[in-house]
Length: 271
Image 1: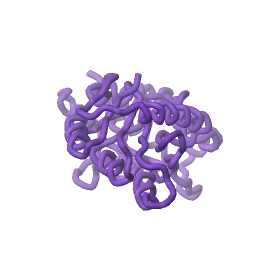
Image 2: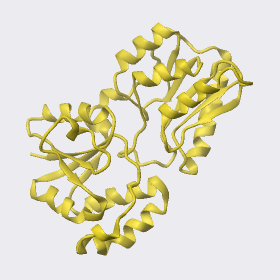
Image 3: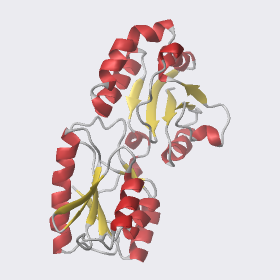
Image 4: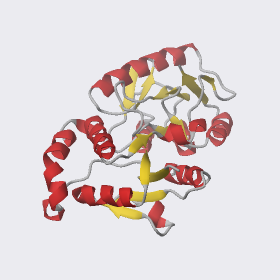
């Protein structure tokens, strides 16, 4: 039987995936990168690792019978401490540094390649929890208006350009103008900052658009939204949220839809 390792980052997603994996009958190996703890805050027996000791970590997974891995939760590229490198990982350092220099997507592709060399197949969260991906269509009671539709189209245009530059996966648009783009701090910070600017000379209304990058390997770092995103969009004065169907995880779709209906926001999954 396949044994799976869950490589967890921050946020609520790791717990959702851990619960689903536990139903498969063989307990998953839980692991997390130091500095991005989530599972270990409430559990014992979580494997901790550092990028500087990647080879011993991969060897440990193989010893535990792991042949499949799934990444869930938020992480950023950590700073490397050369003093912590072990000899085996030191030999991989040129590959690791070259990949990190190519941005997030390049670094993630190299991680997948390295795990494959250890006989570990990387799968996406959507392969474990397919119900987290919304099907195309209107998801709640409220529908976007004509101007919203134009802003959604503009938003996805902007996201396509941002993705090509490996910049982010979200943006806010109102009346054709880009109000905010998501950068390293993430969606919540972007929406909070936009909320603080309301009352200035910004167009009213607007939409929040979210999509994976055009050339992104969807096995890692698929964008995810939750109820807090709906609240953040409302506080930012937006009229609704549009996501790319099949490319954005909704961590609790029923709760998100209920909250959006309550606040008068539309939720849309665009094909």
